[in-house]
Figure 1 (tube, rainbow, N blue to C red):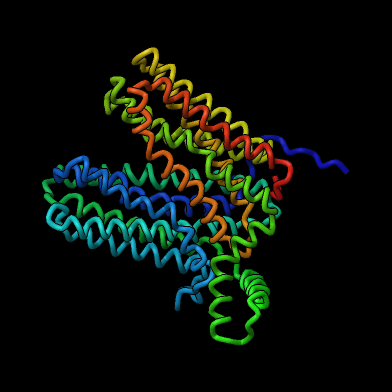
Figure 2: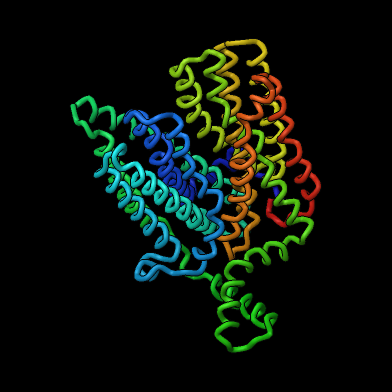
Length: 457
């Protein structure tokens, strides 16, 4: 019997699933901490008179996001005393990290950034670590909201997670800026410190809402982990000893998820997946790292950048992330990735044309909006892809590992983007052509393995 393909309208109805709204909340909780350590911290330091160099170095705290997979196995294994029994394994970890961020904001509200700069950055690093740790368990809880055989729902969930992240980040940023300006206009000298208390109140509200997110009670995750532990124990060949038990635990916790990934996919396919994940968004990262510098050099004002890149950018991202989820459900995740990758490369050519033709507000608007559209499609397809790859026995660890590999690719290689522009003697057009070419290697990896990947769509 041939299964009838769903219409676009029928596909859209997937978003009505109550689980999608829960995933939206999880995404917002994941994106909100970036308001604190990105925009708010940067503007706070700037208004306190610190140099651009100091503010730039402060951004090194973001590096922890590329390495959160190192402690992801702990999230899959260790239970939080009291919290795990009361509210569940995943939600217990989220509450613990949210509480850590809340306490950090209270500390920020009590210090002077110029007099206590070391404390400020140390607390910022704690927020980054807590946020990166929270991301591990948020992604795991999101994936576990949906059954393994629900490929279309997984794509929709990925779209809602991305929309939630941008909503938490963008709208959280608007609340932060408007609140700080309001307190400043009312004559409060430490207006940022008071603003952080308001942002802390938002975190409390998010934690209350988290209690409405269902966490599966019945799971065979621990049973499967024990089976793998026994296999590892037999391989070690030393029975019933403390050293054997300790080695089994360490290997099962850290190495087990990696072994599971390679065993499930095979070495060549696993290598192809890792190559694709590492390289897919390199071109976008190079462009993104240098975009504002380019906008300023070509002559656009901060107001123009704000209107097109931030304001319309959020609206465009939300709309086309949802449409990207629909496309992934209709055409399949892999086809959507190929489509998004090709469009992402072509979009970079628009910036090359802008560089060669000179300042044009119309072309600037088209390029920025097109970039947001393709980035939205690419992100939702990418998130859906790696969500479908993970083994539910090690949800948090495997997703964190794959996501971190992608992040590491963007953060390590893209850090040389400024040096590349300087090496090209400021030839922005050639730079954007190179970012277009950077997309191709990842798509080659995916093309080679596309018919052998074990996912639902």
